[in-house]
Image (cartoon, rainbow, N blue to C red; front, side, top):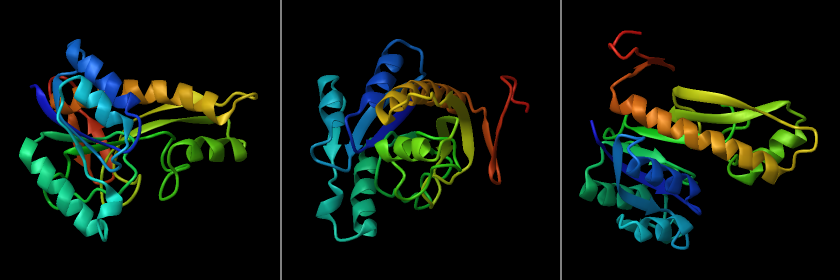
Length: 210
């Protein structure tokens, strides 16, 4: 199954670039059909445009509240009819609205439930990990629900925190893991191998059994 993927982002789009490269190489069974950004200046828009992918700015600050913002997001998404929505560094709430339950994945640069939730994004996450003296961090891909960084976890991988780490150094290693996990999660989703069971996600074997 070749998935129609819509990507929501707020920043430079390095994870998007990785996904586009993997799709082009046939490593991920999908095609990015649209990129929506919550900031007009998001670098990810230019990355998408360079590859011929429709790139749409839906600036959060132009809307009076989260509901109006999501009205605009959903109107744009409907145009592209995605099978899967990927949140790759998306810093605003995305409301599922009965349309994208089980069809929206978020990547977070820590091991949820640690260092997750409102206010934990980007460099702030890695600063918090170092300030806490944690020995491991990592990355998580999870299904989106109505809370920040809360939905059922699909994949996680740990990254060791080194004694001389800086937030930027730790971020570099975590981001590399994020890109791997996103690709793997998309492959599993496309193959129909993810089954949500309450707060857990069961990964089925290739034959369809857990």
